[in-house]
Image 1 (cartoon, one colour):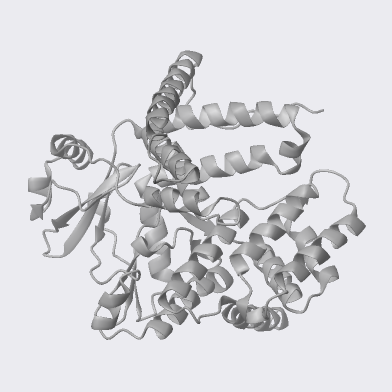
Image 2 (cartoon, one colour):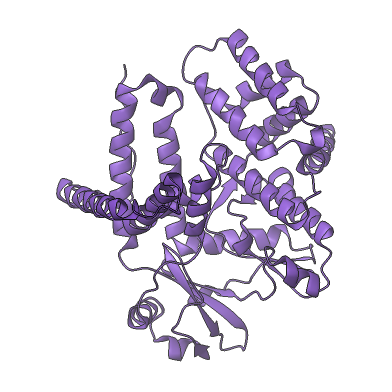
Length: 439
């Protein structure tokens, strides 16, 4: 077997730092194991519920990297039991805030002056605190309400060590486990590392926000916050503040006179336009990242996690979805093969057999009830099993589909994603044919 190369790191991690972190991780697990034994005395709670809560508490104590892993797992109801989905979903919410003095020190160092001098007003108490950073309400000197996000001190060094440990573990498992190699565990681990490191750099998020703003410049019903470049660095980002009702506050939306089925359709179309028209999509579309303004405009925030699809990948994806809709397993196999890079000999007959089973399993329900996110996750699992290495952002795309479907279904239980997807697939093919005809 060929040796597995080490993955690139943001900064070198020495053995002593790795050993200290492994010791700290072990201490967290041992401490929570002891606490778990005390929880066994609660007869009113199921064993699975206790275990799920223990997992969530452990991840919170382990820090940013573990919390991000938990957040990704919370979007996989096809893999994890409901008790775990419920607990891990709470990782999307609050984290303990940094003291105001720490926040003021970071802003002063990054922007060259304390927040009281940089902004017309600044609230030292955060409006939200997450694993990587926290957000503060402020007013810009031009009078615009803004949000100032500040990265937590020390989080980059901790993430670098954690990702180094994950990379070493994935390489060791890949050497010992054929299944790990077949499912490209190392590739998945490094994809996660790339995504997480991008979230740590607020200049990357600023660039993402500007690109979304340019992509949707002519879309009046979508509000992408303006970036204030002079108050943005690698550790601090200042964005125009969005106001409105969260899409999971159904009563609030109804009181505001918002048409919920129309909003569900617009949220889905927004994501599908990003995917099929722009090839650049918001990869974390949970309810907390949307504001529905009083006139129904959708405000979108948090641009740290994004995905990109080139023309060839979008074309293969469109052909894949069209093949599923028509139960054309041969076309689905061709599209799948064009999406992935082979890591070994391909048994096409076996691939066709597995895809046929997959398609007919999903098409047991009416096409309108087809869960696109679950379908893509199953297709990707099948591709990995057949030694196909996928584009980095395809797993993000499947998660995005699943989250978008969940958001739309919450707004309108009768909403069906599959017909909306097929409309955008058809538009993609028409535009593709137009470009080809134009040379």
